[in-house]
Length: 303
Picture 1: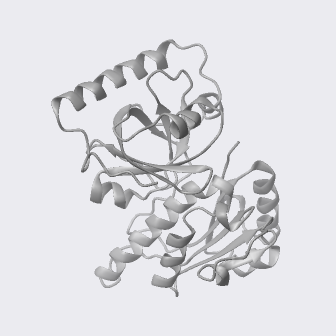
Picture 2: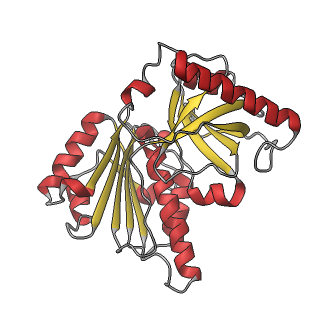
C-alpha cells in the first residue's frame, strides 16, 4: 500500500532536525557502548564503511510483494553511496542494527534526495520493525558500507555486466542495473561523449513470479534499451499462470550454464552475484569453468 511522502527531499523544520540529531546521538552512543552488536555488524566487520551516521526520515512505503516492504527515506544533501552498497540501519528503541542493501540508484538520490530499501519480513528486530511499526515520518539513522558496488568513471573502458540474483539478493543488483540505465541516459544525451557503457544482462531466480521484485520496472528498462539491456526471470516453484506482460521473460527452472555461457566474454564481462551462499558458490564455479577470472566475479552472500 502506497503512503504519500511527508518530505519533499529531507528534514527541514526545526522539530524534524532536532529529532534527527537526537537519533544520531542515540545511535552513536549505542555503537560505542553496546556489547551485543551481532548479526549484520559482526558479519560485515571487515567490510569498508563510511564513518558518518546520517539521519533519515521515512517518507513513503509500499508493499513490493507479500513479504517485502519498500521504504523511501529522505536523507541529507551530503549523503552519498555507490550502486550496490548497503546501510547499517539504526532504529530508536531497537537494540539490533539492521543491514539492508540500497535498491535505488545514486541518480534518484541526486534528483530527489531519497534512497529506497526493500526489506523482507522476518523476526529479526530491524526487519520486524520495518513491517510492523515503521510509519511515514519515522526517524532512523544510517551509515553506508560495502565493497560490492559498480562505480565506473567516464574514462573507464567499457564492460558488459552480467548480474545474477537469487531472491532478495536482487536489491543491490537492481541498484546497479538502474545506475547503468542512468549512465545510458547520460550517454544518449551527450551523444556518446560520456560513459562508454556496454551491455547488461540480468539472471534473476525466485520461487515464483510473485516473489520477483521490481519485475515490471526491469522489463521497462529492457524495452527502453533493447540493444543494451536484457533479462531472464527464473522460477523454481511456479504454481499459477504467469501474467502475459512478463511471460516472455520467464523461464521455469534454475539458471543454466547455457544462459551464462551466452553472456560471458572473458575479456569484457564483469559479473556481480548476490543471493544464498550455495547459489553463489555454484554460479561462481560455472563462471570460472567458462574462463571468467575471479577478479571479474564480484559476489555478496546474504543470510
